[in-house]
Image (cartoon, rainbow, N blue to C red):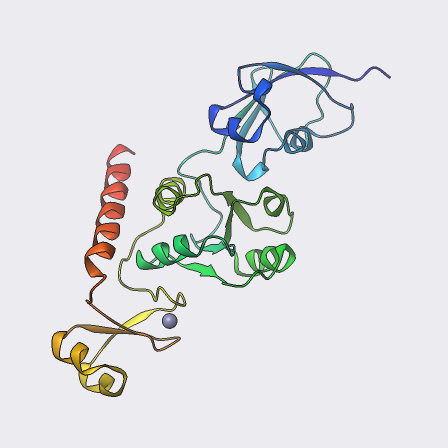
Length: 245
Ligand SMILES: [Zn+2]
């Protein structure tokens, strides 16, 4: 049987995943006549989590569509902000610890384990807790158990944070979550913390919060200016995005 030949084009956001020859507009592709379009796209290296509408000869199709000879296919990037079928909460892989702490700083629910528990355990947890898996590992994003997933495009935490905020527009509640363990913070009375504070800290600060999960104590200390600037920038980005929509 002749293998069907289609013509395929990718949105610029997806060019990072495909070979150079497929980044310059339409290119021909032989398919096997039985694989779905979703499988064809994935086999070219693109995680389906990053794919938006699939268009065949001008009309949207489902990923289960089986391409036939002569079809012209356009692969769009996922829409931003991306709608989720549940609350916006995340699970980050072992390489994204800085991003996890920054999301928590903003009050975004960001589960993270500092040891590598493996792709199977991560995808099971994503499904069980309905968390968006954030990773730079394309293989992990292929796992069917994932509740939802997103590829992290940058190596740099500031860019990673902007990317996640722009893509999912999570509600921000800065200074309400423990950056160490993701637990909720509650205001704490200085008198009750006496045994946990160094004398200098107790003398210098008055506003304290404590994690309801791990009991970590927070106060406005030496790192506060840097953290404040991360929070301010995130709030401005979110306000600008809301004004545009
Ligand atoms: Zn904690």
